[in-house]
Image 1 (tube, rainbow, N blue to C red):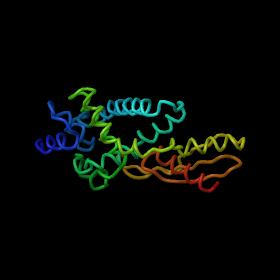
Image 2 (image 1 turned 60 degrees about the horizontal axis):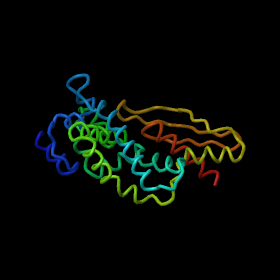
Image 3 (image 1 turned 60 degrees about the vertical axis):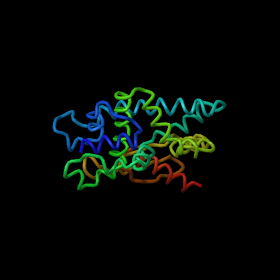
Image 4 (image 1 turned 90 degrees about the vertical axis):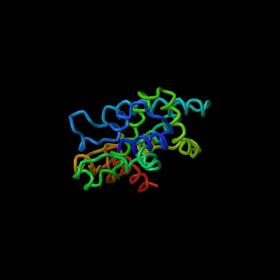
Length: 224
């Protein structure tokens, strides 16, 4: 297993690991932890901040004439859980995640929450093991197609719905959790969004953020 992780780090992260235990930790879900903190969550906390900083700097440099609002739209899409999970699948992270038996049976290796978190944990491990340069190089290489595919600044559905409500002189959208189902490591949230005077819509997602985004999209489609 150790050799397998080392090969993965070299081939997919482009890094020669010094402390392989960091990357083993980054790939370990809490359901497979041997001790209370022997899992990826602390590294994920660190990697999330590194990803945000690198993407923010890349956008600042790439779009020198855009105002803060447009940069924020781009940023929110690029660091979203869905984008992290999509890029994690691109380099084969789901097959490398270490899960407990029940979590694996429940399909946690395909959860956007889990694989997205592992992606950020690996970025945290890269920072500690190889420094900021190694982490930045990995992020910019893997996220480059996403950076290139953005033409006009994307309008996040929640922002678009809020702006529409304001334009029609309605109150801001209200998001409500209707239901939460599934296992702890693979939850499903049902969210209802409502704008008094405009309408409401309901949608599901693997996180509150994802469900809110889907609900906002659904309501926008109704209002088009």
